[in-house]
Length: 101
Ligand code: FES
Image (tube, rainbow, N blue to C red; front, side):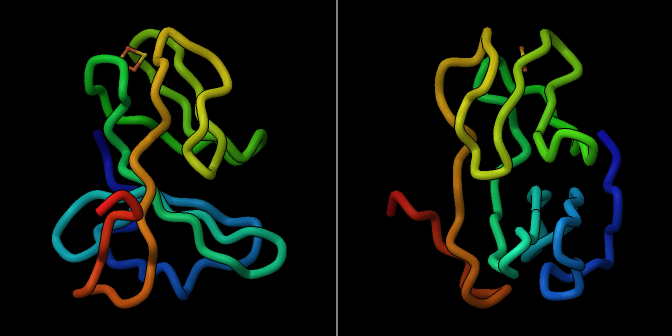
């Protein structure tokens, strides 16, 4: 898959803007909501691992392989994926922590 903005930092995203970026050396999906909050997800589809792409019209992460769609927060909108995208708590670039850990 392609990186939309390899050198983009999440804090540079405008409100309502999303992109696949490189964060701490890894591909991540980033979206800044209308209130300015950043939402960071893993771009690996939870179906069988294709790379999701940002859909700016619907503000969703869409998988090109079998059509799964996810909210910018990671929740499944449409299968076949059943599990949400892994979410991350964005504090600092080199201190990226999974919300589950
Ligand atoms: Fe994403 Fe199948 S890998 S829908």
